[in-house]
Image 1 (cartoon, rainbow, N blue to C red):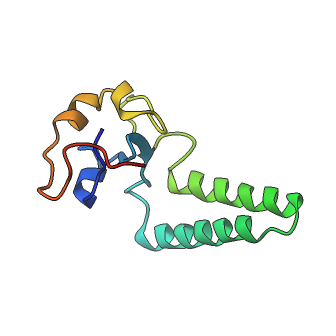
Image 2: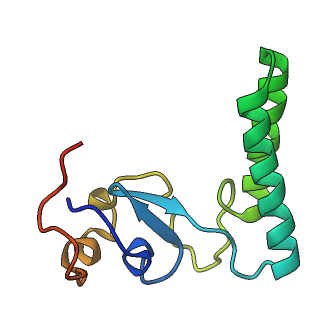
Length: 119
């Protein structure tokens, strides 16, 4: 697996997922109103900061629930936002999904190494 270096390489052709370190991550629902999307992203970032700043386990749990709520509202978790019956491959290794062929054969940028970088 090679390391993805450009933004274009990160998205599946159908724009449902980003590929990060060989794993698919569901993208936000593109039909969300831009202002609503921005509001939800701000809430998500605030909730993530709250997880890091939590003074105790109750605060951490509450912050994690806020993260989950925001991600579900964005369409990144929970029910899929598309309606063509295609299953969800969120968090799966791209090589174990129907995207494997595309990922293996996608065009690579000149600056992208042909082999993985050391960890």
